[in-house]
Length: 146
Length: 134
Image (tube, rainbow over all chains, first blue to last red):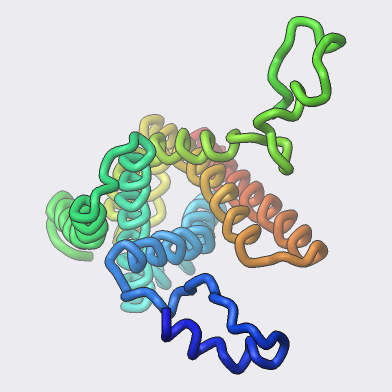
């Protein structure tokens, strides 16, 4: 509590003589896995929102004809395009696992300190593993990367 | 969401009509719809990722054939409906969390709906066109 008071002295003093306690904000807390995964969930959600334009581009160009599709085909075939697609699938799967975590919480389970921590770690590790596995399966089915 | 049903609205009080529906008049409607679409998204997302990876490196004719096949087209349309609905609610929450002045908030909420509806309609139209082959 001392830290909070010291940090707020200048602002509090300029207006009121009494140093009132402030409600603690982000910088007060030790950074935790659950906080990080909460941020990840929102950031991946926002990225996926705009990433849907990629799907719209794929579908609309494919529906427009070979000439229009050639543009998308070129972009997604470049290293940048492939990395964006790989990142997009990771974000999608991470957001999915984060969502399942929320569904578990909705059922009033997984609120204990160890459970929260384990679920947050499982979200990140699971999303990376799942992304690699799905790309592996996809490439296996196609007979190698292309 | 409309107000909770009562056999005869004439006899419902003002309190009865607003109870549980909050300032946005929608109650827990968004909360429930976000969960409903989240559950639907789980199998659809996995299928979608596999479908997209299987499209890589294929020429236009093969892509048209894959997306146009009924099973793939149906999964894709379901994916687009569920995901765009889900992302509209999600972005609305983000906007309401960070934007507090009326005009920017209203503008962004409108833009959010326009964007998600446009993406949904564009994707669904394209899938149906690929599938019906016209």
